[in-house]
Length: 234
Ligand code: CA
Image (tube, rainbow, N blue to C red):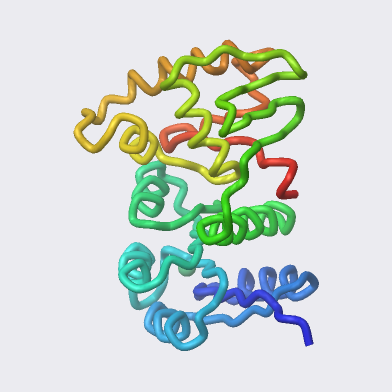
């Protein structure tokens, strides 16, 4: 008997539950659903699911509080599925410890990709992390400290290399501005994103054929950046 990845879906809308359950059960997943926050928290503790899909608008609790509570004892991936599209909600959910978010309505392909990405990042925390990032002609060799694009070396500053490494090691996942700022410049950096935007513009000038339509590093407006998935992981 093969082990199926268990997905806990905390969602009160029946039609969404049906859609997600049907989509995922055709794949390699077992889906367990909870229609209230309290039920969701209790199942999260008793089932130890591999991934949690969480709606923010639940009848008894705010999803943000569920993220906070789960993060006190579990690092399993949480993907927010929500009709709330306000940028500050996305940022808050991510900064509280959600791994990603997906905005309703969404398709099966997008949902599966987000689940795959979040599972990969959990595994990478324990396994030896990759030494090379590779996607569509862009190669980042972390040990050699080298970036090449279609075989030609790209010269980056220290900060630019650190930034691109952080994004590529989390490829497929959105990183918030404040998360990136803290990781690169430390916790005492002021919250103005100017320095980050300048560095990102420089990176794009060096690696993107058309910086206005990036292939590698995408802007999630008002939230942060997301880098193209690593081909090794697809
Ligand atoms: Ca709801």
